[in-house]
Image (cartoon, rainbow, N blue to C red):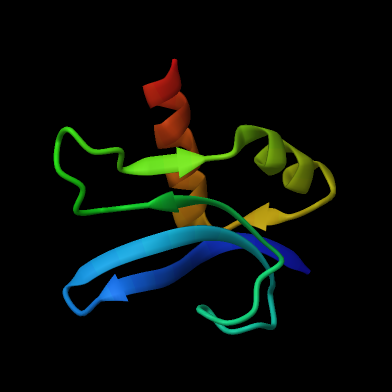
Amino acid sequence: MVVIRLARGGAKARPFFNIVVADKRSRRDGRFIERLGFYNPIAKPNEESIRIAQDRLTYWTGVGAQASPTVQRLIDQAAKKAA
């Protein structure tokens, strides 16, 4: 099964997450198929905190990829911000 989930990056106490499409069996920060965007939970007010490639997200959900609950919340949050 293919899932859309977060892969952690950044330094200790400075998290940064990539939103990736990966096989469910691969590790959290391991191999992934495609990077769709990023999420920076500690972004300053004038910085971009989330970016998602909507066209690729639509493609992957169309072919059956399931978003994790956290990623689904971020997708909804990005849609509100864009509207």
